[in-house]
Every structure is written in structure tokens, then in C-alpha cells.
Image (cartoon, rainbow, N blue to C red; front, side, top):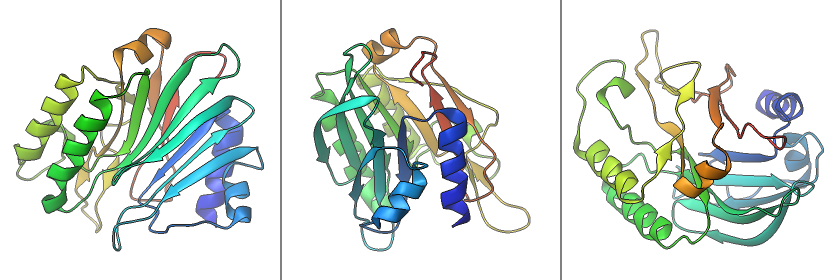
Length: 224
């Protein structure tokens, strides 16, 4: 319940218009829980069931701010096709959860490359990718370049830009008194989405409710 209250307070304080949760570990949510998460606002939600014991995505958007054209899902993402009511701008919103298991990372990257390469609208894709990009994304230990190299190749092929996170260097903390820190969560945008919102920022928040850091995407416009 502390997590629910924290998120509800964040929605009110930050004027949040959409919520993407990764690694939910469940395939459905009671209506009262969803109402609490968005602080009683009129959100539409869609959830993706986890694979076994890991994964799961919950994506919700404010119906006062967006019209929803379509909802789609893949093995590792939920996608909303949205239209901003304020100006008619249409874009695609992807919430992703990349698998922690190495045997599924190739499948995840292939789905990301294939899906995004066919996208005709400006789009933003964010969540827990479970893949780092650079050695500085890890606080210590051996850095395996295999998956970061493939991940960066996909990002480059799609001509995506990462909105650089401010506030901290890492987004995930491991267990124990001397934890390992990694940057696993990020927000990527297409060039035509960035053209629409050139002042966008991604800011970290101190939640202390999860081993992952909450991230706030602010478009820099009147509709956050």
C-alpha cells in the first residue's frame, strides 16, 4: 500500500498524464487499486501478464488529456496509440520490460527492432530494458559488452535518442549492505517525437519503495 500511496502522491504533485509500471508480477489489478494509483483521475489501463514469475507491464493514460486510438501488446511491450486533446498531436507510447534472463534478450531486442521499424507515428519507448548501454552504467565488476553492443546497434538503426536522466547515475540497486548499482531504466524517443517536444527531460525521484528508481518524463510543455 505504501507504493500505491507514493504513486498517487506523485501523480498529483507532478501532474502526471501517463503511468508505465514494469515488472508488476501479475496479469490483472482490482479497479480500486487502479483508481488509487492514478489518484482518482480518469485513467484507462492495460496490463501485460508476466512470463512465468518475472515481468508484467501496466500502462495507464489520463483520458482527460488523451484520446486512445488503439492498444497493442507484444511479448515485452504494451503500446497505446494516443492523440493529445490539446493540439491533436498523435504519437505511440510504448511501455517495455526487457527480460532479465540472457536466453530471452535476443528475442526482446528483435521484437523492439521489428516493431519500432514499422512504427509510422512519432513515439516514445521507456521502461526497464534490463540492458545497460555503457560501462559507466554499472558501479563495479566486469562489464559484458555483448548485449549493450546489440542494444546500441538497435537504438542507432532506429535513429532513437535517449533523453538523458538527471538526478542520479543509476536506476537499480542490488541487495545487501554493499549493493551493485546499474542503469537499467531509460526513455528513448524518435526524432519526430523529439522535434515536437525539444525541451523534454527525464528526472529521477527518491522513492525508496522499490529497487528501481522512479523516472519522470517531462515534455516541457503545458501538458506534462
